[in-house]
Length: 459
Image (tube, rainbow, N blue to C red; front, side, top):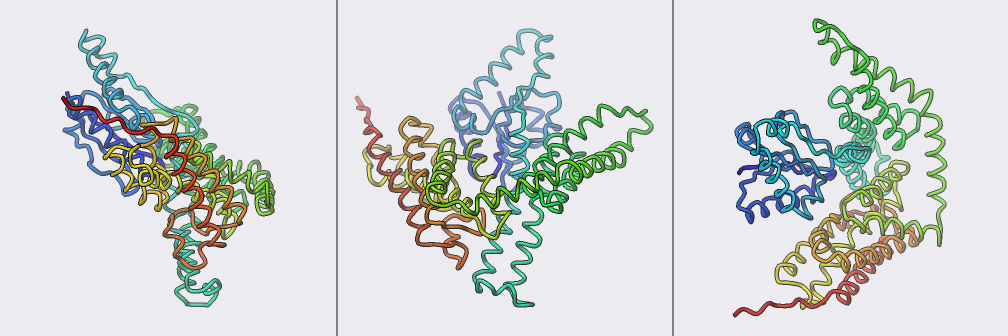
């Protein structure tokens, strides 16, 4: 038997490759040939050829973003979330095997099964597709702004300076594209290519009318579902169908989305954004600490899943409202502590980890430092009842302290490396204390809660 698979997560960094590795290892153990294409942040790698797809009996798509399925027409497709492949790759492949075994019973049943698709749809998946395309723009823009501050906090005001150029590239251009890209690819996930034009125009209007992040999200969904409605509502003779994707759909959908953004969504969402911005800016003391705890718990609960991405998306939205964000700082710090804390535990309590886990702990140091929360997932999958409460406790401490210390950052990514850029982090000392404290809490709790590894006797 031969299978092919595609893995893709919103950030395209950790889950994408962890799922691919899990599927490859499970296939090897089961004696199944499987080729996995990863659609990560650097693009598609180990790409499936026409021959691979033709020879494959089942296509497995483990993704939390929209993956084009045009090239798999006529194939049996099993579509699940990327974490499903990480947690139970063997079960997923076995499901694919069982489907094909059933196909062999009768030719009629086989032809019916060929069209069977097990799909994951919904608002979350569409949103995550938009976020996955947006993140590189926000990260590049934010870090370039941070680099401009390295020349001095007001150096960008000097005409013709490198600092001014970096600020313009990062803030005036890369960050400015976040709303059109977010809205455009939400619409793309819903309605495919015809959704891009109205989505991007709607996202640009969200920025123009002051509706910001929330407005761009709304524009993306309005654009996507408007295109779907128009596709069904407008029936043209075959001789005129070529006009649909080139003229009719883009013009009508863009007009509808534009008018909705200007006259319906824009002003209310803009007012809500202003209120939210003022409220978040004025958070102090216990209120700030409570928000930090909630953000920390969300970042560590599913380590890259819906709760984690919801907290991260919220942090990015606040960064778009001001030059720096305390909430984004809390989110990033809390996202770093799960892998860092587990890495610490592998040092503090070596007897409670296998040799392979201790080796993985070395990688967890690097992943945590780079703000890749998913580095803790292999440990959480192996022992969820002890690892997840420990990581949540540490992340909650970090989030609370970061908010209480009023630390803020100018970029949505970069991890520990952002700390070395002058003026990129306010209250740098307090921010470091928050990260270290959460790491220690997680490391100590894991060391206490986990049981010693029981070595099997070899006869």
